[in-house]
Amino acid sequence: MTDRLTSELARDIGKARGTDYFLMKDQLTEDEQNLLYTVRAFGEAEIQPVINEYWEKGTFPFELVPKLANLNIIGDWNMQDYGCRPMSAVGSGLVVAELARNDTSIQTFIGVHMGLAMQSINMLGSEEQKAYYLPQMARLDKIGAFALTEPDHGSDSVSLETTAERQGNDWILNGLKRWPGNAVWCDYIIVFARDVADKQVKAFVVEKDNPGYSATKIERKLSLRCVQNADIVLDNCRVSEDARLQKCRSFMDVAKVLAGTRNGVAWAAVGNATAAYDIALTYSERRVQFGKPIASNQMIQRILVEMLGDLTSMQLYVLRLGRLIDEGKMTDTMAALAKYYCTVKARDVCRKARDVLGGNGITLDFHIMRHLCDMESLVTYEGTAEIQSLIVGRHVSGHSAFV
Image (tube, rainbow, N blue to C red; front, side, top):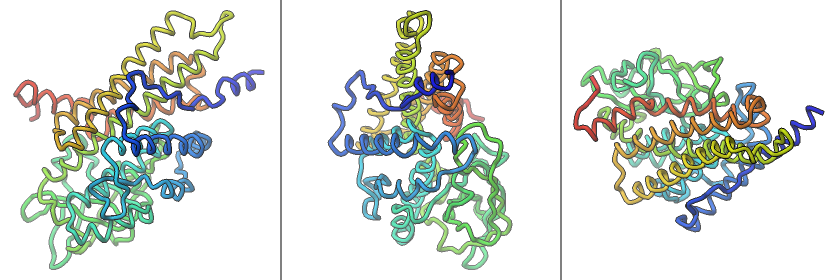
């Protein structure tokens, strides 16, 4: 009886309800709407039925990679000359949100590959490098990763200690990196290191078979469990000058890449919050206690309204931010504020949803705990919520709190 009841309550619990109280979809182009519904259908048909098992085991569903390739969602207006689907920043954000609504590990796989690895090459590489790397990555024939964070340098990544020393036409990389997603099995990883000659940060495309490069999966994670994060050792890892991204000359160039990806993190937070709200609402309509659905309870209704208010504000945040990106008007402060607000609010929405589901909220059958755990990573990466608040605080107050 208990299993049958749980099964009925959890049936299709992750299906989208089209929650859009301020009619955001009216602001979308036809292509953006097509992206939204294409990824939504794929996620519900291909990701939701299998992801809980992979998440619980901490493994990655590699069989989804060719299916994702067939979707043709690796896109950006700035990379369409290299085989990417042309899409606006809003279109790209909708892809991120819909993937995250189904599972943030899958979204992170795409986000790291496209938003960090490919964009690093696109923004910092030469024309020859872009023409060589990007088409194969656009087809998902080759997978990318991004290595900036180190064991001793997370929020202060500007202080990275990995070194690069020029020897003739080669560079010798030495140091440690921690947390890069996809790094255990990727084909290319963008490694940032400090040039021992001029002390400036440079970027290198390191291939998985490079001698001196090794990646070990980080075990025992309780968030983004399908993402294969790694501890990386660079031990006299030799790469050619051709592998150095020619336009990366300082950490300021790295920061340009990160500013763009904070937009993606905000969209991912919206995806998680949307999933949490939709699940909580559907569950409250189905769950009967004391002879009536808990949705009729005033306390539950208040929680749902609080969740909806936060979700709607997040949706409007990212839609406006996407348009500002397309217009070339986004600033670092805008990106930081959106990342801060959306991740913090989305985590709170997931917590409220877990409360609505009571004891059922902690089981994978209902997805909520997976989204809540994954939000703990989104709040942290691309700069913690605290770091984002310092970026915004410096702008609004005119004073820097950074050392």
